[in-house]
Length: 424
Image (cartoon, rainbow, N blue to C red):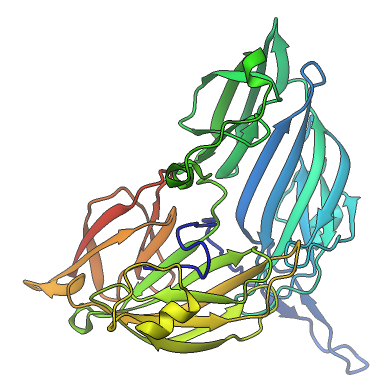
């Protein structure tokens, strides 16, 4: 079980896969003067963890505010290029660095500049917001987080039909939220979504798209006088069930060792945004043992300190955590306290051994473990082929031949994943 220091059941996590492009370097023949020249193609721009929030503005204006969170993942990249959708007019733009809350420099550029910066698009009409990152993306697996805020005017996407407003827009980003204007009730939504009322009374329609295609979203809403007030708060015991799943950017990837060992390596990413928090407590699931912990800050590449605690020592660090026994183990990772308006993105690595949930049965690999996060992945060990997955997964083959399964759970409950595999 993975828990936090203060609010252990809140999960603020996001899923996306990062593919690092291989740059080819071609050397020209030696020139007459004896000085060699080298031409290198720019590294492909890669990104992860994209989340978009659309706030619909006044009906009839065709305008909506966009808050777009995205992570640049190309090692060494100094810029991030965000395309401006053709047909939309952008205004009121700003860009900030979520790790500090400070503004970032940006400008608008054409396709030639973007391609030189690593964008792989041949659309010469496309324009981009070019963001100067706070620092080059740390190698080998660092991140450069960006928040882009802008207002779009697009009458084809946001319009009125009598007193009903319509938001009709295909969304390619996998994690989305659309917030109705204050005083409007939802009439219809064609894509399975959470419906959450925000504190100011506005209704948020939010979802995680687990398919490889765009979400063909169509929303309709109408005025309602009774919706023009602040929300009625839920009882504390129920409030956590009405949290926004799509906003959670936490993910975990398991790399299974050979099943005879019962061992697997993992990394999990988490963003801490609570002011003053300076540690992360990872309570080891009953039946598992932990070894080889390590961690670093993805924003900067800085290595983190950690310590292994047991029993009462855990309670001193995380007094709110329930079920701590004298034999309970936990790994505590320490980092600089989060400042107001800032956040810290962590990557934590561990090796686990679990004889009950990961084992070899009749010469068949068997993995039986529940996942609470929306984004999880399991990589089979070398030499094994997939035979069963009890929960729907996206399956891919890694460059080294290992099979990877990605599980997206847009619901707020856990999924019990049973995987079997056989030797090749």
